[in-house]
Length: 173
Image (cartoon, rainbow, N blue to C red; front, side, top):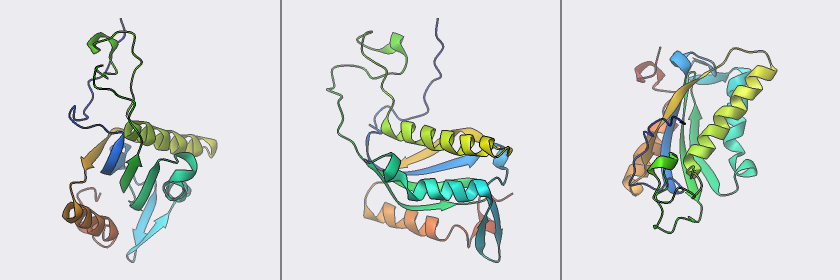
């Protein structure tokens, strides 16, 4: 019998459209992306590649935009805006676990946000391997549905000032 991990995603959110604030960390919070010196993020090769992947998101994912992001020494923050028409008609339970689906023949649904984060993590990991560099991600990521302009403005301010506030950041190590 196949074993499926219980998803940490909220069952009441679609994750196929909308705007989300995400945080993705490196394994054990190691500084794989570079270091901050004199208030400037100095990228390692992996950090520069990650920054480029975030900048060019709609080359790879035409229905996704990332208007604001920051690559920090051991994590990234980004606002991910998705505009994907859902094919979900509300009559089928879209669980990744077949035994929990109302219709056992319906295909597994992987939400757009999860697919994007997985593809970003995979691209960065593959790049690091091609260079023979040590690299690993934390297994999961944090997401937050952006709820209105005030929420968006607070998140943008947090992202924009993350490098300057590095020494007080909860991920500072």
